[in-house]
Image (spheres, rainbow, N blue to C red):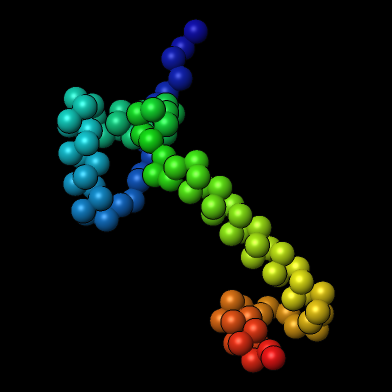
Length: 97
């Protein structure tokens, strides 16, 4: 049985990001490819913790749900208005009595 061939893939990054990746790979004694593969395939919240706490994530979810409800309400009240962006909604709501 033959071994599967490795394939090269390109990753595009700004020079400062490239430097950070090289630095992090070197700190861990890995090649850049090994470091990136480790991040992609073995990401673990205990190793790379989430930047938001569970409470912060819930707060964001509730905000999204509120915006969804507002959007649905506006579509019901203003059925002929398509593509209204948040700035338009803000202006519209400020003009209401």
